[in-house]
Length: 357
Image (cartoon, rainbow, N blue to C red; front, side):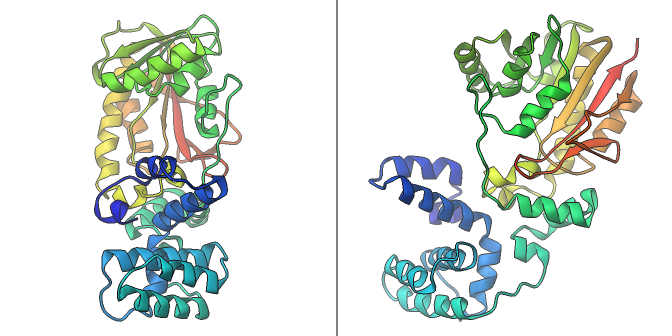
């Protein structure tokens, strides 16, 4: 926990190797994973619970212990004596007295929160951003869903992929024999999914290491995918070559926070506007590659106007394209975009543009 909070480590990168090198059994590993991911996700709420009874500053070790103890008490329904005793036992020195006293008071006190941002444990600006984009009810439902642990879904070909990504593949609508360009393809899940429908896919990404991930998945699945190292904003392909283009663009990732427990604390408020400009450049490039009558799908695993409708509006103003009907249920129409709210999947937005001709 201390490495994540003060050392900049990512929970999903630092925890698995630590568990692999431990002697813990399966149930204990799952419990530790829930503690680390859950406490990281809910740290603002946990801090609120303990700060009511904390006198003076707490060092990193004591703060981490208090959060872990509060998470067990508030979210895991761990019996108070077990949560307090186990947490105190993991703390050395004088900090044990503080952790014991504070957690006992947390266990006995009613749980109250000053606002939804604290209760749901998100930065204020992120709650405001989603509320402005989705409306209060949809935003609250999305924020609550992204506090639940992610599930794992496996395609028929054995590839592990979130259901939202599989729905994006369906929305592309590729037909056998068509040429599809996936401009931001790594690690290759959507590209191989499209190829499974009978299309040939050019799968590009700008970094060689990321294209290597595409190559690994293509070899394993035997897909009709042609990997390409290229910046999607200037793909070295002929104009008008593609029947379909997928721009599954880099984004702020608000819709995938359930599988990235520390991401909510790392995303900068300025990120959506900056990324929206990048997404527009990618869409500009994608439209250039389309045949007349071809379709571009622009998708992002986030919610917001600057990474959604603003990008689409710029494309409509710059290019001979029309916004076409969305894919329908379970997608919801919202402000000209098709939105998939997170539930048993990540959250996504997409739009489909057809080139005139």
